[in-house]
Amino acid sequence: MTDQRPTSPHIQVYRWQYTMLLSILHRASGIALSIGALVLVAWLLAMAAGPDSYDRMQSLIGSNVGVVMLFGWTWALFYHLLNGLRHLFWDIGMGFELPQAFSTGITVVIGSVILTGASWFIGLSIFGGT
Amino acid sequence: MSSEQSSGRRSPLSRARGLGSARSGTTHFLSQRWTAIALVPLIIWFVIGIIAHIGASHVVAMTWVGRPLNAVLMALMLGALFHHAQLGLQVVIEDYVHAHGAKIILIVLTKGAALIFGGLAIFAVLRISLGGVA
Ligand code: HEM
Image (cartoon, rainbow over all chains, first blue to last red; front, top):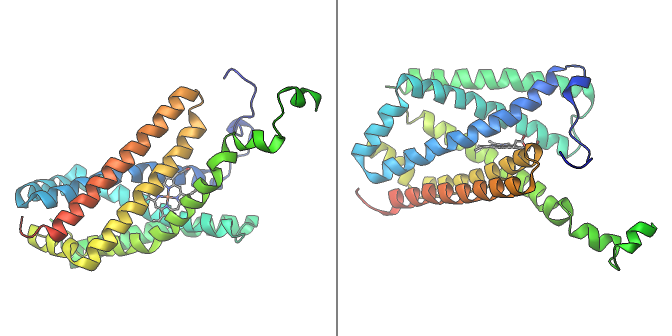
């Protein structure tokens, strides 16, 4: 840094609070989802290209590594969606009081875990995966 | 005051207009929000659709994506998603990359990538929907 412009808050001087982790996770999940979006692009292109490339894509996604990554993206998506809603409510001035910020934060974490579990349970048990 | 006046005849407002967020910050902020709002129903629709098509054969998947309503929703979601992702990544870059040149290059790269990948994905959806049997 050459000039003396203000910098972001230094995390060393802040008392650690889990809401900080939630905030970091929103950014991390947003970045992870941006990368995951490329898989969606590849999936659609493979589908458009025909059955052979689609099947190859499906087995890639259905591989062990593929499933683990999909699971991670599912959680990232639900977390980012719920916490994004939390952001949007803040933007219209709701939920900004500290107790609410803490309790909605817990709700977001628990909700994202439940939705991820439910999605995979329903997906695998009812629609059967490969 | 006097030092500011010596920097020319421009008013403080005029100078502020040319700087950083005074130029496009509000548009960016609002776009990040309206894409987020649009993504809520679209992503819920998408996740339910994906869950219902785990392990689907090519024909079944093509039929799902290709149905007119689904193709339109998918294209809308892709547009909102890549726009939102680009705006979000731009904020991340602006927070961490301080060298002006590198910052601009990275932002332009994410914009280009979002356009190309979003365009490819929407092209694929149109081809699936309109292209007939592959
Ligand atoms: C599903 C509905 C979604 C909602 C409601 C949502 C909401 C939001 C909101 C409100 C922000 C701004 C946060 C802030 O002001 O710091 C944000 C940031 C971001 N979002 Fe989303 N988002 C959604 C989906 C996505 C998806 C699908 C992606 C990626 C493909 C994504 C990527 C990002 C990124 C990269 C950021 C920037 C993170 C940061 O600045 O720290 N979002 N999102």
